[in-house]
Length: 222
Image (cartoon, rainbow, N blue to C red; front, side, top):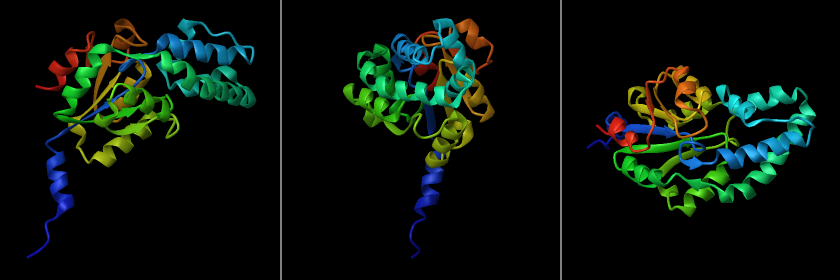
């Protein structure tokens, strides 16, 4: 008797499952104030002032590319990144997870595979998730140390999961992320409790805009 085709069976199973890829900052964590303080201080060290409004505009595109454009100097860019990398892990300890997201992550995991793609460092993400006993619910965590482009990170998540494109959701709170999700041809969900407000997010024409965390359950789990 032939051995069962395990790969084929897994593929069949995955066509019936959903993959939910989530941004971290602004979707899961209430981190805008802390992250902005670190980034603005990093730019101050190279003589560049950065307002909160200007910082939020970084996320109309890829934030790392925006940081590079603002410095317009390779050495300054490296110095800014070094400051951020050294200080975010320390300052991020103050950041809290949005309380409703704890139960929502648990409930989403019951019917879908969960992954995180983020511009934050993977170790910072994992440490925060562990503090809330949420790390067990995510099969993949791809931070800034993995890829710069979220398109590449989303593609990596999709390839590894084997879940077909029509069953993939990408949740973010920024225009730049939503645009990258749309380029991948997956369902995009914009949430307005993070870095960008509803009016700003409308410009990216996501498949859905949600204003309350609980709406994630009603929209995704049908």
